[in-house]
Amino acid sequence: MNQLSDRLNRLSQSATLLMSQKSNELKAQGIDVINMSVGEPDFNTPDHIKAAAIKAVEENFSRYSPVPGYPALRQAIVAKLKNENGLDYTPAQISCSNGAKQSVCNVVMTVVNAGDEVIIPAPYWVSYPEMVKLADGTPVVVGAGIEQDFKITPEQLEAAITPKTRALILCSPSNPTGSVYSKEELAGLAAVLAKHERVIVIADEIYEHINYIGKHESIAQFDEIKDRVVIINGVSKAYAMTGWRIGFIAGPEWIVKGCNKLQGQYTSGPCSVSQKAAEAAYTGSQECVEVMRQAFERRRDLIVELAKEIPGLEVNKPQGAFYLFPKCSSYFGKKDGDRVINTSTDLALYLLEVGHVATVGGDDFGSPECFRMSYATSDENIKEAMKRIKEALSRLK
Ligand code: PMP
Ligand code: GLU
Image (cartoon, rainbow, N blue to C red; front, side, top):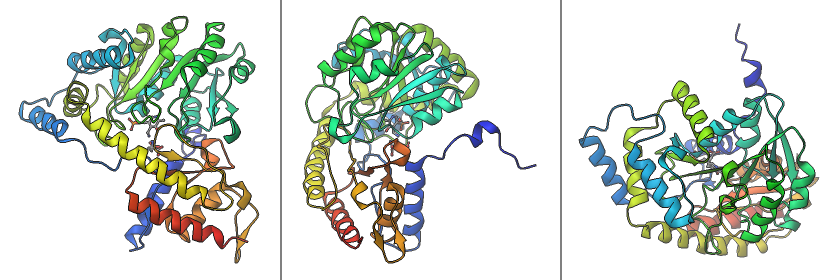
């Protein structure tokens, strides 16, 4: 019988990937859609990184790698963490995977037991609660609206912790809001976490380098909790390498060993050639990262300015990542002909089908009153998309 497992039936489909797929379907029909749904840099991978991959192919890096990744890559990551973040790790505390997505999932599967609670501040990246569900854990969502710049407070964290709490998943700079926790804000959360020894912190720092307020701050810098923090990072966003699929964790050895055990049975070490490319990314010139960051910052300024001109949208000024997450609930209950907008997903589908701009509704990010736009696209696309969105929204009465 064609019966999927209960585990799979409990899982939602990734809304980011689904909207991107819908956008591609319309494009295939010849419709000129601007895709602001999936979040990935629109730049090509820098040439020196591509050259390292070509060399790796020629030098026959074609066999299984060690499960946590080549020692040279892990050493390069150790050096990156020391030089850029001032953090001390050993290669045994690093494990590389097929993208940061697998890295997060590995940690969740490694530390969460059935019935354990995992605190997830909302708005959250769509995949976190689903990963927790895969591990038979219970997502505990702590909401932070636009009025608090989408960031939770230490008091909210304290109130959410119970004897069953096993982990907190903290994403800064954040997908989908672009909010960035300051050092002081992280210190406040760390002070709460210090009192709860069972709680592991999964710190997703994949947008580290797409930061518009200067230095990245990691929650792993606080010594009182460092032995319970697992950093998630990778090359996808900083080096425009989403397709190469290299992410990593840095954390306590017992968790890293657990992830290696899981990965050894599940996927093995990540792609050998991609690992050599990632090594070049970490050890080579970092100029490309800054060039892309500056482009994202300029686009951030542009999209915020244009979004503010659209009646009924409320926006924050994101300090990192490449997403804008406007509040759009003033449109709920409005109509264009027979079409009624009741949710942010209805709005995203309306903007796609009527405005030909692909975005993602906030429902799957735990913030039903907002929707997400990725501005990792050209200035021309941003201007045209915002014009279309403004026009489509003006038809809603
Ligand atoms: N964490 C967050 C917050 C992300 O936005 C993404 C991108 N999808 C990932 C992790 C996964 O990144 P990767 O492409 O390296 O798997
Ligand atoms: N980070 C991207 C996003 O959120 C990639 C898509 C995904 O992996 O979900 O759109």
